[in-house]
Length: 211
Image 1 (cartoon, rainbow, N blue to C red):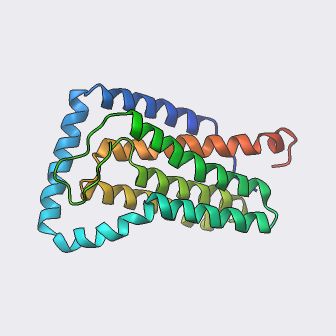
Image 2 (cartoon, rainbow, N blue to C red):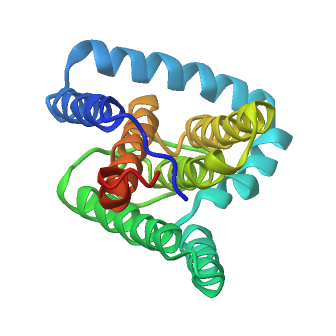
């Protein structure tokens, strides 16, 4: 069983993502000021906390493409073996769609990363791939577990999902691998793709009143 997100969730996220993309690529001054101000503050904090930066250089990679795809394949296969086909299809779809969409946008959208970051990444920065991956994995977990949990369990799963998405996004900003708007773009991308995939896969069952 897959929880069916309200249609407003992906719609609002998509509008927000498109608007943010337009503002970022249009070099809108208020966006640039926010990015630079926040990143400069984080640069000072990171410079004063080098041990934390060293730890985050490792921890941030839980949102990298390889761990995301590997986890997606493992979960998809496990669900198929247990004959949870619709759930497996959701995992497979997200495992493929997020890296592909992120890769296309990184190739097409020219957005340099913050200069002289604590990690070196030679590619465009919008949206944040690590953030997209972490938020997408967290959303899939919520949608798969939600129908099987009571109120307290749901609250814990949502809290854990939010914590994962915020943690990975935060590491990307603190390491100056991304501007804050890159991270926001990653969250919005996940909030668009995962609910849309879930709604598409549950549409038939919902129309027959079986959810």
